[in-house]
Length: 133
Image (tube, rainbow, N blue to C red; front, side):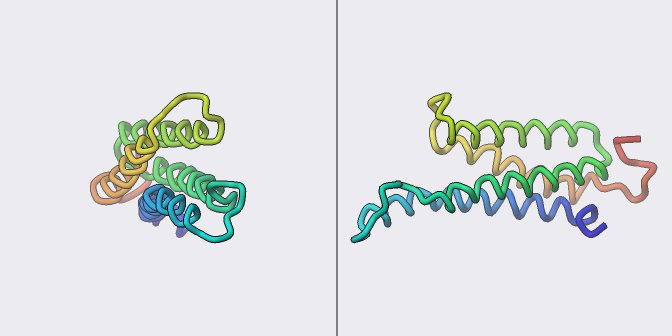
């Protein structure tokens, strides 16, 4: 019940933290390159796996947000933006396409904006106004 009421807040927070995580990754490279004892890996596995954690949290936040939004277009916007974020993160692991590192900022900021907008302007006062009905 709490997740259903706070899904947009959780989604915006998760996407914002994902963005912060992505911004600080280059600094992690610099710190590790100057450290006395570096591992053979440029970025530790635990740091990379945070992407997946944010992706899972975002998935559930979007799933709940689309159930309570009053705008049908918001459902599509949230899912399409999530899909773009998912593809970019998947591409970081597979290197299927050459994408700039900054490309992850666009869907992350998009999800933050969409969750905040949905929370402010698209909430149902009762179950009869939701786009799913």
